Figure: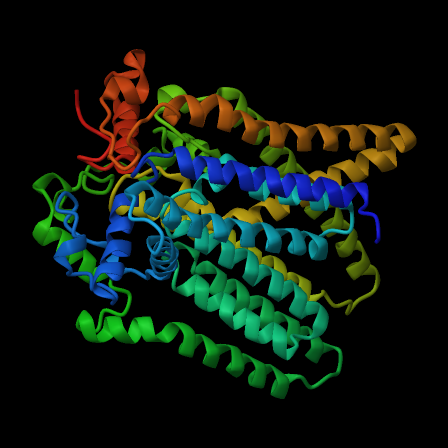
Length: 508
């Protein structure tokens, strides 16, 4: 029998560690501590009780505080959660066991996500150190790990994003073989039926796929028949696998294929006056400019912090050293990317002037444009929703960008490391290796600390995890943080959206 190498053992132990963390978080987390979990659970219960999918109008899943249901939006994640609950219900009817079973569907998405991120790292990076850092940053980010432990749609969207990028990268190597095209269509379909904020990956796929064949055409090939045939295959499979949902919406909601307009109308009719769309005190109707929201309020800071991970009431979850550490990693990666773009751009411009007619690599350019779209679009939607609709500075709305964002962070860090190594030779190599290992250890240590230092103290002693907890302002923020001012109002709105009225947030 072939002996396993040290690296393989390390990967096995790491995978077991992450899997154990997700299982534990899913176990200790009370109902609805994850945003809107109770509303997702109602959909799961409806599917199990009636054996069919609910419509957005279904009273059984209506939240009369906000006046709408999540039945208007794609619910493939809830269908998977219902399958897990159905299997467990054959053995028990215990309420928490069945809730845990539903959460296991999201843990499953996390396991698949881990597998694809690991495989994607092998395609994107040559160095093992960069591959390792790429996996750790994606999987161990507390905010991302949290998504894999309660009922939501974000976890499946993250899984689909990793799948899409893996099969796009693989397709650029195997000329989009039949198997790659089929799996790419499956990945697009899962993305479409999971979460609207992840739809930027459809543009990403289109740009990268088209750019690959455009590059082939510049090399004297005639790939357009193959391009049209494989493009039609992917599009056809997506229409079959995911199109049924929008056809259903068209007939249910008078032509509203996305269901968003109808959801707003429902909220206007049934929500409490304070939460009706027409009565929301957003930045637009308060006369606050977009610049003020981004740079003079705490919106940007809260989005960054919750992207990294706010895992419990703020008075228990706030750890400045965690946010500072990830901020340094992101900033270092950003500096590295800017440096790489500047020096490589300068070099290529000099080559272009020396050898007129030198062509750019269209395929690689399209790849980076596609990744840029996957990063920019969810953030643009996040900004616009908070500004024009409902002020909610939540990092999870930007989370679909996770994989491409971490790719550039790792690439930038790798570029700086290479520069250090080339400049300082043997000393630089040791510095780079030591810094990389310390960064990896720190990332793993943060996830371990979040488990024993934040999640367990906050939730370990809860006796009934099927009961929705209600918090006072002091419990959420601590007494010294309860005050006045625009920034405080922003924090209160963030809290009221994380802990919906009547389910985790109340005024003392």
